[in-house]
Length: 374
Image (cartoon, rainbow, N blue to C red; front, side, top):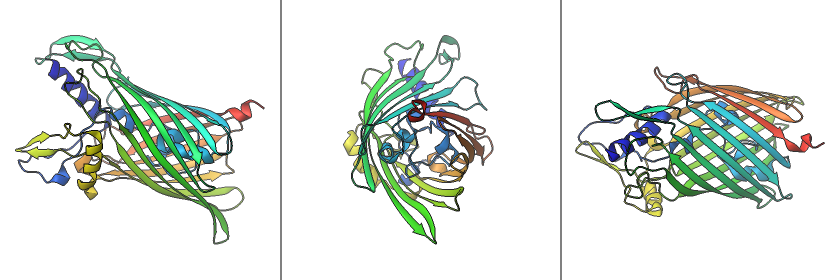
């Protein structure tokens, strides 16, 4: 009974991300396997700007929500202090009470250093837990959250680096009638870098930037006191961006992100999946390099247009191979910037039918605390 509810909870969290197409053949190529991880809410884009550009953001211009994408970007942000709140009603085409909340804050220490923090809270709504026959046993409100703190430092006038530390708590069995089941907790860290170069091409000023973020490298997580342990969704994201001024009032930017899970793949044996959860976290991370296949890559492309640094229009596309999830969607969004605050929104446009992410909307509200103090 305990394993039934534990497995149900983990599968539920995975389904919230996407509908996975898994081959059921007796023999499957190594490239057709994919890593299974817990706490997938850590990979959901929590804010609107990156969400409007195909879930890209590791190399885009710094903003208040850089914590999720690449906290080293804060070192180049032209503000001293800011806070942002984002809200995402998740999977609204399927359910009406799953929500993701995201709160970020950053503070500049001096010209070289910044600190930042964030809180991510994922509510899975109300769920009725049942037994094997479908009879209701209890109800609960599963939830997950992560608290981050990061430090960013300018290493030169063009490069910055950052390290972020994260505490994760995942209570997917909340209210379940399952002896031995308990919330899972874990610790993780991110390491990232950002490069920014001012250029002048074709007589127009612009910026070329690049970023890399290795995220969620940390302990395993368990929902049964350590009897079974799952990897966190360790991820490598790299990207580049280019922004140029068209004239005094207009500028455009383009970005590309490529990311991949850095968790060892399991194997399919006689049609049954065997994971590599017995490996240590470092062993899993380094083995993932040997497991590489082109199908593992998730690709995000996006564009952004600004008028007078006050009004923005954004669009993008996200691509994922069917082996690892088959999420393919376009995105769009807009933003308004005032003296003291910014408002951003994004929208997911499904490419395939029956995509659970279709019509997802994100909202973000940011405050420039420098301006508010004047």
